[in-house]
Structures are given as structure tokens and as C-alpha cells.
Length: 195
Image 1 (cartoon, one colour):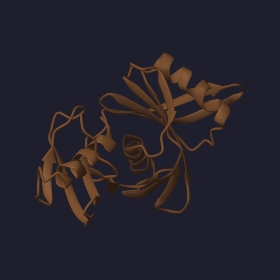
Image 2 (image 1 turned 180 degrees about the vertical axis):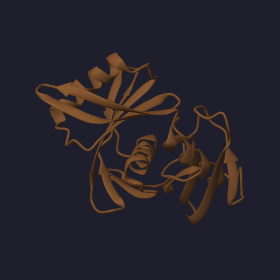
Image 3 (image 1 turned 90 degrees about the vertical axis):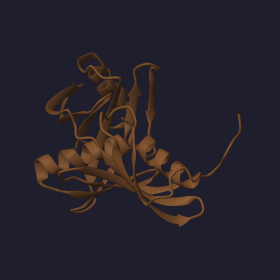
Image 4 (image 1 turned 45 degrees about the vertical axis):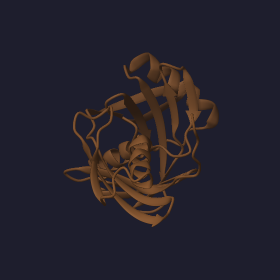
């Protein structure tokens, strides 16, 4: 499941006139059900997009030992990607050490490390680091939809927080956790190409 792909596909559908309704459903890998989307048009190429996201398959407590530190957190397992959520202030040199342990202990097509810190009661900051098994790539994401959702799930389960604004280097993703979970952000179509 990729939250960014969901929001982008919804914005593109409206931008290209494929779907002119404000509310519609999108089918994508990572979810057995069609996911509800809502589009608010802000400009010809700029949209506020709300996307329903699947619930996690599991949430597991996890401790990872790095050098002499025990890093505690929770593994939020989704279809195709699992995110390790922690409030530990991960140093740059520790990300790959943590990821190596996750790769050796978690079966998933992709893995994320989502260290977070609280700005206030509803605003949080993350620095997502993602590994994709098929390519072997490791990358600091500028904005991670599934990582933002996973943080929202973590905050809801352990702190009772139902809505959060998740700040990251590429912008803000809003998360709402209830009977059905949603992420939202502004999406801008910045270029078009041809085959």
C-alpha cells in the first residue's frame, strides 16, 4: 500500500477529467476494497485530496538494539509495508543499523523507520526512512503517506489521539483515525509528459 500513490491517482483522475465528482472510489494494490477519495479543487492543477486508507494488519511492540542503546517502538504492519514507529531521536548513523535489523526480522516487501517527535498535542514531526526489498533501495522520504498513517495508528492506540498533523520535509499530511482511516494533503500536478 502506498498512501502517496492513492492521493496522487485521485488528483490525477480529477485533473484529467476522468472523474469529475467530488467523491469517488479508487482501487489499488494493498487494499482488497475500493478506497473512498474526496477532492477539493484549489486551482487548475492544485487539489486538496482526502483518501481512505486500509487498517493495519497488526501492531507489534518491538525493541531494537543499536550499539549500547535499546530503541523501543511499535511495528505497524500493513499490506506490503511495515513501519517501525519510535519516539527515539534516531541519529543519521543509526538508520542503517536499525534497518538492517528490521530486514533480518520482518517479512515485508518494504520497511520504514518513522522516528517522531511531538510539536504539540496534535502536531508531530517525522523523518521517514524507507527500504524497498525488490530494488534494495534505502531512501529518506520527503513525504510518506503510509508512514504518516502508521504514526496516526500508533498515536491513536497508545495515546488516544484521533487526528494528527504530520510534518515532514515535503509538507504536511493530515491523519484521521476512526472507524475508517483517512490521510489528506495538497497535491499539485507539476508537469506532464508524453510517451
